[in-house]
Structures are given as structure tokens and as C-alpha cells.
Picture 1 (cartoon, helix red, strand yellow):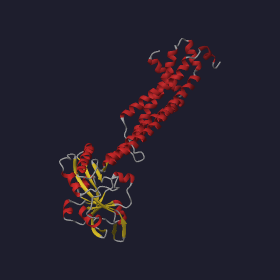
Picture 2 (cartoon, rainbow, N blue to C red):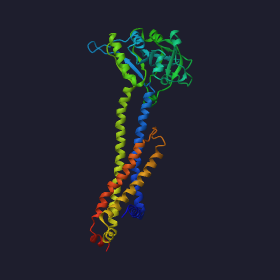
Picture 3 (cartoon, rainbow, N blue to C red):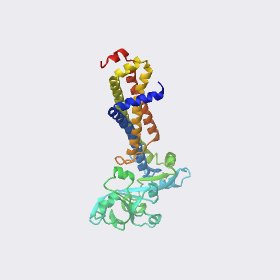
Picture 4 (cartoon, rainbow, N blue to C red):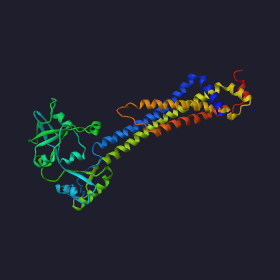
Length: 396
């Protein structure tokens, strides 16, 4: 029996019990569709996490004072250290540098009062952190040099101080008793939107103004710098360490977006693995369903098999017929499963835009064919090994 005859006989077998065939195809559709959709959701989640991290500044690095285990104290960072990182020829991979001086004073606006993180820094900070504003503007170099009493606040602080819905820009707030005019409101980053931010909020102002009113002119709380590119972050860290150690500061600690990416990336890989496992189980269940249906088909068609054997049909021909039937069901299920997944992934799922991977589509389609061959083989072998005499007795 050639391939055309096999396909013709298999088509008759599939159409002979259409309801059962449709249900079998449906099981494969669910399995293949689940594989593609869940992997696409995992890909979309990974991209979303990477985009959220990138919104913090892909090349940003925060430098914190080294901790001396013997004294139990942190070696202080100074403005001179920040200047050295900015100007040293030994740091070709360090671009912008912004010192930070922080405090946690009470902030008052009219009858409202709250405590918040107050950070004194320079305008380069906003560039390094890829900061955006929803109202007003950030402070500039002229504000810093002119010792302007201006401030930029974030959305949580704005919502805590200006509950009547009025614009915060142009309003005056008291920071540790010192007046500052709000000139801008920072837009939430993608990470803020996803994970939230502390309810106290944050205020940023020119560093000399903050040091004069809040934190004092002692050591810095930290230094933020940007590498010349995301790929140069590690090199920039090593260069910063060499410069600061040579200045007697000790080896500082760092925090950068690539560390967050590694942390979240490990969790994301685990999630993707779990999603893939669930999808694979769905496909396995579909394959078991194909086996069950084909075994039932062989049982119902025992007399037909006996007649074909009595007429001289070879075991390979009979086995090939049933393997072909199972493969046809699986291929149909795979095709409709791919189509279903492509439709489903056109829409966001739980806030995630799925990203379909072409390799996953090809793999799922290939697996659907393998399911037909693998799970159809056992029923086909049972049919091929059937004794024709006993088969002809069935139903008599």
C-alpha cells in the first residue's frame, strides 16, 4: 500500500467517527496551544522586566561607602571622591557622576506634613537615572550655582502633600523648616508602577542647598555614576574601585541595574521553566488521549483488520494505516493549536504582551507530529499483530 492509499484509508477512518476525531484533535489543540501561549507569556514577561530595569538607567551605578568590619564603621565618601571619579584619566568608562547627600526630615505644605527621603544632588543625576517629569522641570546647573531654593518631588510625595488635586509646581514646601519651591514632579518609573515605592516619597534638590539645611557638609551618602554604555558597567566599577582604593576610601559596594536584572532574571527563568512544564504536561495529556482513542478504534475495527489480513494485507500496511490516522489527528490538532495560540497571543494576558517565538511554534508543531507517530505506534502494533482467525470471529 503506497502513501496515497494510506492517506485515503486513514481519512476514511478519521471521518468514520467524526465526533471522536474532533475530540481527539481538541486535546492536541489544547496541548500545542498551551505550549506556544505559555512560552510567549514567559517571553513577554522577560521583556517587560528588562524594559522596567532599563527605565532606571541601564548604565547607572550607585556607589556606597565601604564597611570596615574591624571598626564597624563605613569609610566616608566625599565630594573630592566624586570629583576624582569624574575627572580621573584612569576611568575612561565612567561618564557622568552625581554625588548624593541624603536626609529624612519632615516636609510641610500648608496643613499637610510628612517625612520623606531628601536627596541633594546635581542635574546629572536625572540624566544618569533616566528620570522623566510629569509636571514642570528638573533643576539645572544654573539653579545649583545660584543656590536656588528649588526642589523636584515624586508622585507619592505630591499625593501626600497636595491632596486637593492642585498642581504641585510653583508651590512652596518647608524642608526641615527651610522653604523650597517645587519646580517639577518626577514620573514614576516602570518599576515603581509594577512594584510600588515607599509611601513617604522623595524630594530632590541642589546638593549645596540640602547640605546647608538638612544633611550637613560632612561625608556623602553615596555617589551615582553612569558607564559609557551598558556593556561597560563592570569595567567602570573596577575603575571606580581602583580610584577610590588609591584615595584610601577602601573598596566600596555597588548597586546597578544589571544586578537587579540578574536577580529577577533567575526568578524569570524559573517561571518560564514552570510555564513550559505545565504546557508540556498538557501536550502529554493530549498524546495519551490519542493513544486511548486509537486503542478504542483498533478494538472497534477488529473484524475489519481480520478481513484485510485474510485478503493478504501485510502487518506493515495495517500498522501504517493506524499510525497514519493518529498522525493525521495530531497534525490537524497541531495546526489548529498554532492558529489558536497566534490569535490568543495577539492580546495582553494578565497585563503582559505575549511574544511568540518562531522556534517555539516550529517545535510545538513538530512535537504534535511526533505525538501522533509515538502515541499511535502501540495501537498500530496491536492491530498488526492481531490473529486474523480470532479477528474474524469477533461480532459473529
